[in-house]
Length: 82
Length: 82
Image 1: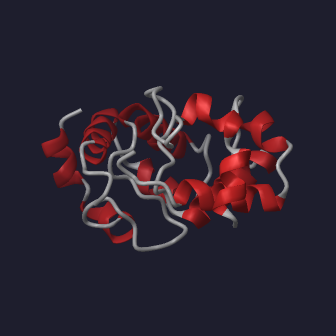
Image 2: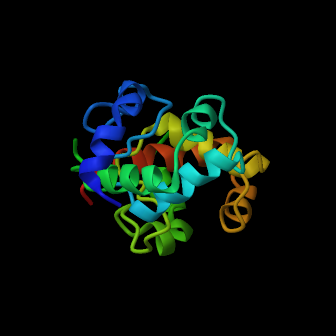
């Protein structure tokens, strides 16, 4: 995916996952430096509800495959240390 | 949880998640520095199969709550950069 485009699409993610991909909320995962293909798989699972989550289901519902690839590229590219 | 005990219990996790919690397999997540309560919730979800995964289901099936808390403490405490 395209990390630059992903950054633009990540605005609605930042409230929970943090501006630098390090979450401020103890039950929400850090995404910075996570494996890109893992992130793609989870977003698709939330979108298809194969993986159920009250918050992420609606978040992922409107994402295209391209959005998912771009968001995954963006977060995977962030410094894991924040 | 107790990170030291968690380290001892993490032997079977290392093949996929890496000795320092950074996975060598692109579709398997890094765990190092992840949120402790998030890790607890995911291990419990795999154990109860609320979150379905062919690999993690059997892995988590035999874990006690204490094992889960110790493993989560161990991985959360690792350096996110590996």
